[in-house]
Amino acid sequence: MSLKAIELQVALPRTQDAGKIQEQLSQRSQQIHDHQAAQVEREQVKKRTQVSQNERSEESKLSKKKDNQNSSEQRQRNRKKEKVREQKEKHPYKGNSIDIEG
Figure 1: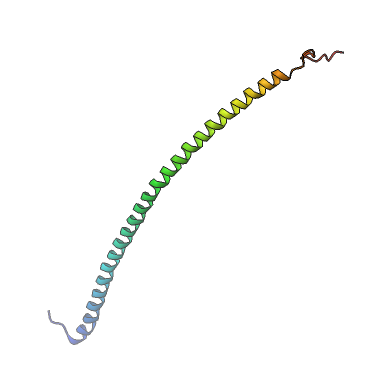
Figure 2 (figure 1 turned 90 degrees about the vertical axis):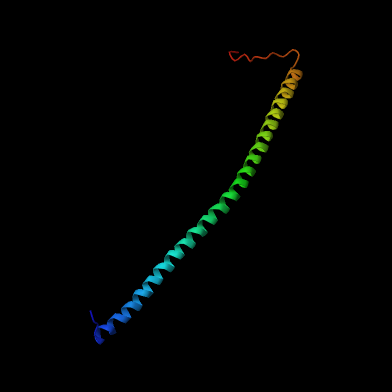
């Protein structure tokens, strides 16, 4: 199969175009690979920081739980003190009930 001069004029630019297209495809696959590698790296960094954030939140939950326990104990103490005060403050001869019928 012999090529004529006119056919060579068309064939040579086509081979250059094919070479450019092949190069672009290989670069595109390399770019996709680089993009995926960067995304994996970002996810790993996020996971590393997320663990430390979870530890901090657990510590804060524990401290809040302790604060809640302390505050509930203080409330109970205050209630007991109020009951003792009420018992001491009762009038010695006044009654506890009110006669509404009159």
